[in-house]
Image (cartoon, rainbow, N blue to C red; front, top):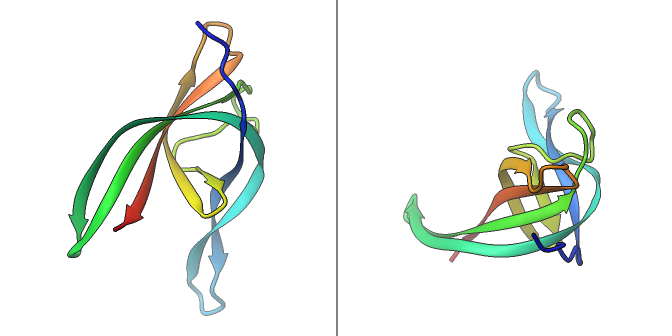
Length: 112
Protein backbone atom coordinates (compact mmCIF):
# COMPACT_ATOMS: atom_id res chain seq x y z
CA UNK A 1 0.00 0.00 0.00
CA UNK A 2 1.49 3.32 -1.06
CA UNK A 3 1.67 6.36 1.21
CA UNK A 4 -0.97 8.95 0.26
CA UNK A 5 0.09 12.46 -0.84
CA UNK A 6 -1.82 14.72 1.53
CA UNK A 7 -1.43 17.85 -0.61
CA UNK A 8 -4.90 19.45 -0.53
CA UNK A 9 -6.12 21.59 2.35
CA UNK A 10 -9.80 20.90 3.15
CA UNK A 11 -12.06 22.36 5.83
CA UNK A 12 -14.14 19.76 7.70
CA UNK A 13 -17.67 21.05 8.41
CA UNK A 14 -20.58 19.62 10.40
CA UNK A 15 -24.29 20.49 10.13
CA UNK A 16 -25.69 22.69 12.89
CA UNK A 17 -29.25 23.78 13.66
CA UNK A 18 -29.53 27.54 14.03
CA UNK A 19 -32.59 29.20 15.60
CA UNK A 20 -34.53 31.40 13.19
CA UNK A 21 -35.97 33.49 16.04
CA UNK A 22 -39.55 32.43 15.31
CA UNK A 23 -39.56 29.06 17.07
CA UNK A 24 -38.09 27.18 14.13
CA UNK A 25 -34.60 26.57 12.86
CA UNK A 26 -32.52 26.52 9.75
CA UNK A 27 -29.56 24.34 9.04
CA UNK A 28 -26.13 25.91 8.84
CA UNK A 29 -22.57 24.60 8.88
CA UNK A 30 -19.83 24.98 11.47
CA UNK A 31 -16.15 24.44 10.65
CA UNK A 32 -14.49 21.79 12.84
CA UNK A 33 -10.97 22.22 11.55
CA UNK A 34 -8.64 21.87 8.59
CA UNK A 35 -7.32 18.56 7.28
CA UNK A 36 -4.73 17.78 4.65
CA UNK A 37 -6.00 15.23 2.15
CA UNK A 38 -5.43 13.26 -1.02
CA UNK A 39 -8.50 13.61 -3.27
CA UNK A 40 -9.07 11.08 -6.07
CA UNK A 41 -11.99 11.12 -8.52
CA UNK A 42 -14.06 7.95 -8.83
CA UNK A 43 -17.17 7.81 -11.00
CA UNK A 44 -19.67 10.41 -12.08
CA UNK A 45 -23.17 10.63 -13.47
CA UNK A 46 -25.76 13.18 -14.45
CA UNK A 47 -29.29 13.16 -13.06
CA UNK A 48 -32.23 15.55 -13.16
CA UNK A 49 -33.95 16.95 -10.08
CA UNK A 50 -36.91 19.32 -10.43
CA UNK A 51 -36.05 19.76 -14.09
CA UNK A 52 -32.45 20.90 -13.55
CA UNK A 53 -29.61 18.58 -14.55
CA UNK A 54 -27.29 17.70 -11.66
CA UNK A 55 -23.73 16.46 -12.16
CA UNK A 56 -22.81 14.09 -9.31
CA UNK A 57 -19.17 13.01 -8.98
CA UNK A 58 -17.78 10.50 -6.49
CA UNK A 59 -14.44 11.03 -4.75
CA UNK A 60 -12.15 9.14 -2.39
CA UNK A 61 -10.67 11.50 0.18
CA UNK A 62 -7.79 10.14 2.28
CA UNK A 63 -6.90 11.94 5.53
CA UNK A 64 -4.79 11.09 8.59
CA UNK A 65 -6.37 8.69 11.05
CA UNK A 66 -8.14 9.93 14.18
CA UNK A 67 -9.83 8.01 17.02
CA UNK A 68 -13.61 7.63 17.24
CA UNK A 69 -15.17 10.65 18.94
CA UNK A 70 -12.41 13.03 17.86
CA UNK A 71 -13.51 16.23 16.09
CA UNK A 72 -10.74 15.51 13.57
CA UNK A 73 -12.39 12.23 12.50
CA UNK A 74 -14.81 12.80 9.60
CA UNK A 75 -18.29 11.27 9.83
CA UNK A 76 -21.03 10.58 7.28
CA UNK A 77 -23.21 13.63 6.46
CA UNK A 78 -20.41 16.03 7.34
CA UNK A 79 -18.67 17.68 4.43
CA UNK A 80 -15.32 18.90 3.18
CA UNK A 81 -15.00 22.41 1.75
CA UNK A 82 -12.29 23.52 -0.66
CA UNK A 83 -13.05 27.11 -1.61
CA UNK A 84 -16.46 27.00 -3.31
CA UNK A 85 -16.36 23.21 -3.78
CA UNK A 86 -18.32 21.00 -1.36
CA UNK A 87 -17.78 17.25 -0.87
CA UNK A 88 -20.52 15.53 1.15
CA UNK A 89 -19.16 12.55 3.10
CA UNK A 90 -21.19 9.34 2.61
CA UNK A 91 -18.98 6.77 4.40
CA UNK A 92 -15.69 6.57 6.35
CA UNK A 93 -13.40 3.58 6.95
CA UNK A 94 -9.81 2.87 7.98
CA UNK A 95 -7.56 2.71 4.93
CA UNK A 96 -4.94 0.48 6.58
CA UNK A 97 -5.02 -2.07 9.45
CA UNK A 98 -3.13 0.28 11.80
CA UNK A 99 -5.64 3.12 11.27
CA UNK A 100 -2.96 5.62 10.21
CA UNK A 101 -5.21 6.91 7.42
CA UNK A 102 -8.95 7.13 6.86
CA UNK A 103 -10.68 6.87 3.51
CA UNK A 104 -13.82 8.96 3.06
CA UNK A 105 -16.22 8.26 0.22
CA UNK A 106 -17.68 11.62 -0.77
CA UNK A 107 -19.85 13.20 -3.47
CA UNK A 108 -19.79 16.58 -5.13
CA UNK A 109 -22.97 17.87 -6.76
CA UNK A 110 -23.07 20.67 -9.30
CA UNK A 111 -26.11 22.10 -11.11
CA UNK A 112 -25.26 22.22 -14.82
